[in-house]
Image (cartoon, rainbow, N blue to C red; front, side, top):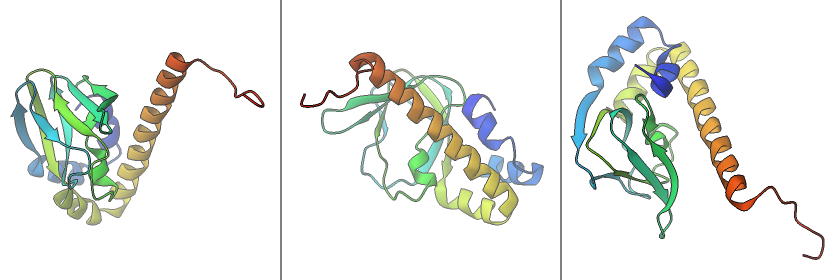
Length: 151
């Protein structure tokens, strides 16, 4: 595993990591194919092996993030009981991913609570890092301006 996924799974017990290997499935998509759409039921999360995926939000499909590094995590909404995906994910190039079904992962992590706690702590850190990158990107576009009184 690489990148985000290596960080996410690093603190799991060997036994739990092996169980997760048995539930993941490799899937492939062509450019233009959609993994999931915003507000669809969040049933799976994905680990990028190869390709580029555009994550976008809102009716205008505003760019939220481009996943392009091996090990990038896509569809984390499924892991935090959002119920639905918070963005749409479209493949920009031929893409290969590992798909992990949410309910199967939940079961594996319930069997090893220490690994489960470590997994979700690291997931929170990853989400936080993406949020900070998003804030920085917004500031670079709009500038670091403080609101002015009466303005």
